[in-house]
Length: 211
Image (cartoon, rainbow, N blue to C red; front, side, top):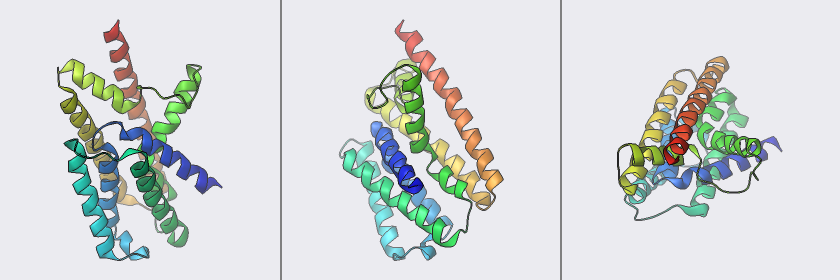
């Protein structure tokens, strides 16, 4: 039940982050890199070449998405999030070679984006299922567009690359000690604090600018 609940949070959150070009597919491509770096392929019932082929497709889709030649849509978000979420949960359950919080850290961004959105809307007395444009990537897009007078496509792509680069840094730290739960929890808490700090700054910029 808990795993199903987590997958639903991940799937919905992945659909949220598909608001910027390349963000969704780029995020899961980063997770693919982690799979190869930690030799997770040895614990999966799939061929190494199959995962490599799938990862290359993600990279190609990333560039097509960046240049607005293709879009993932709901179906792409659902497939990617379920596939990677299922693989990570399955590896942990069968082998327990790393801390469960390492899995949470790899999937933290779409999951926290979803949970934060629900809490934010409850605080504002809005329906949690009602869409809005106040997710972190939306606010970052708005900031880049207004602050630096960028065209939509450039603000969109730069925003996506900034978020991906940040997550690449976090993943780089997380793989240093995948079995240390305390270490992973500290990184996760740090992530949440950084997210909340920049969210508050970007949110204030957007609505102060409008006034």
